[in-house]
Length: 476
Image (tube, rainbow, N blue to C red; front, side, top):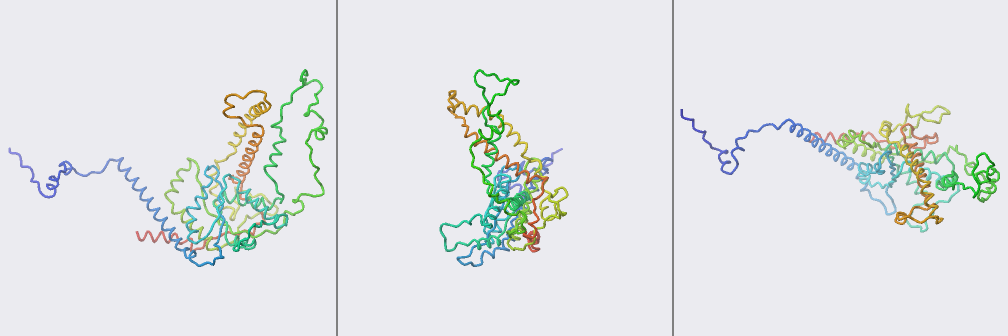
């Protein structure tokens, strides 16, 4: 039988063959990719689409809040006026080496609205846990000393025509505000307030007091050497070395000369009552929700935050608008029974002290106490050998080795300074962890009740971001 003739080729397919396209390409039938490729393409497309949607919504929300407040920056001001100014506190997050993590959150999510409203700001970032507490406490003590007349207020050497008086500076400070980023920053801030207002007003040099304490613990004391020809016999008569002299002789003869302390002048902490009900007004607080995830176990939370940027943008913009609007309320303290001072955390402190209480679980594994203990143990284990080397070289008891010529070992004075620096850092970290650890609550004093205020977002601010998001969805 004769074979049937091949089908006649015509139309667009014949034209494409003459252009040089292989015939196999034109005869190929489209088909779905393999199972693995389908999974990959579906996941990648979904991820990119959700990411693009989230960033578009974030830009829309930010633009909505910026448009709402930008008219404030267009209002005319005289040459003698200054813009509103706030102070931004961002403490170091426990377990995070980047101590500016909270400040980066402010710059990314709150600063654009402040800039649009012409709000000036000062950023205070502390590189170590506990530094903010010491900073606030020192500021409060200086303020108390000036108010009591113990110190004079700082007077500039040159008075400028547009320079504000202390009263005007105080008014401007109260009209501004204080931005507190995260629960850990709130803990350090409140601990500094309590430490400054419940303690004394004496100026204490922490380094000097710690140096005196370290000098009396005997770490740098030289080992006692027996005179030649005398054997150390524990059963015999004790040798009259400085450590075996009677206590009265030890104090009177061997201690360095000191000027007698006048007992007619008691310390300032005894002259000034600590329970004074007078508490000055403070700028209102803006509590900004911020949670920092540190560690591999929180990678799912990090991915969720990465894909939901719009929620952080809305929270930051709402907080910024709350400060700009200036609507405040009293800081709600805990409900304490009469006579109780300790505030347990496990049952909640109630009020604004429970701000971001749920984020306490994220800092639980980041205790620095074990690292401090191991570092201190290894340092003091190597200190005697280093101290012996420094004394031998200082007394020319031996020559320097080749390695010591290239890298000179520290002297005894340098070792003392190094120890002081390390102990100061270790103790500050221990104190800071005691403040921010999950088991401790936010510090509180009953004198704060009614004196501290907090910015509260209005209903308009709460609904602006959601309306903008719904409008964007309807337009899409």
